[in-house]
Length: 257
Image (cartoon, rainbow, N blue to C red; front, top):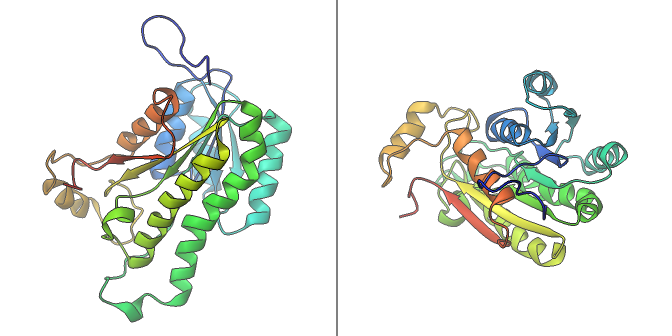
């Protein structure tokens, strides 16, 4: 996106750019879709079971050329088919945001409560899925010549504190995978992780806004992270952090302190 900056007032636009957002029908993904569309990108809203949500989201987006497309993280063949469909329509991808993820609240001390099926599903969705997505879209990212992958990670990947041990492990793996991919996809493609702490979404089953507010109250900034806060960080990675790759952006109101 060499020419992404337009004008002399510091305005950055994404006209003519193609963005794909997995997990794009809800939460952080949906907020990111809105920001990308407002900046002028044509956005492919990837979903698994949220087809109706994705289509409703597209109906209200700024701009044009948007598309809802099933991109299920546990099905590599379906991911490859989605990439082929995007290739036929657009011929390239400039921005790929891996926002799809899953978790289940299991107390860390309850080792037996974290059964194999849950552990495998979390790892397959949160680690193998993003890898399969990047693998499938890599030719389209190279076709851009100046593209970016943003992997939505979590502070849990470095602190080991989160909804479950498996979730923490998955985000640690995603961060390490991002480092490896930043090396092999350069120079055409940058790879950045964005790592929020608790965000005010329905992502963690059983954790309402009260739980997020309680966590935020213990941070230095004492600000509740909304999905759009994370989306803005993703937009910064896309448009402003031109020389950044292989890095993680922490969005946590200072919780890591």
